[in-house]
Length: 185
Image (cartoon, rainbow, N blue to C red; front, side, top):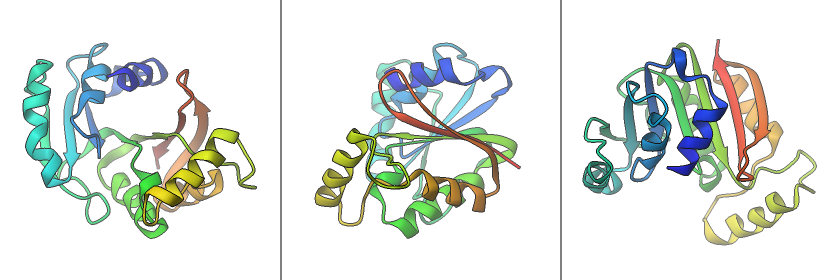
């Protein structure tokens, strides 16, 4: 929920009618995001095992209206189209080819002019020497995930550009998380 609240402060939600949280676990990011703008239609896209338990968790937060969609963003986009796609702590745990495909498929989930928000810890500068927490997490990802790693800003920008995004920006949220944002051309 906390990340959803942080994101709601970063993004102008006034033009957002529909949001999808891709790989969002139980969907609580959507709960936090919709505290500011509850009328936003929300979809959670998750792998089948997680999607099976998400509705009961969302129900505990009074978010029974969140649509839970089973899917794998590395294989195919969502069946719906949305104004905002969120990928938090998804890209970093994937091998490079799947990380790239996840961004390409996320773009296919968006309406024209839609926005993507890719967030997580562990993004490293193009020289891979900093920031320190990114380097540390890169070592962690390399040991925890079969093919995961901290990708560079250049890699994110290249994948996002290939997917048709423009106005790509990188910022840091108050919790230290890196946030990439961009609009679909």
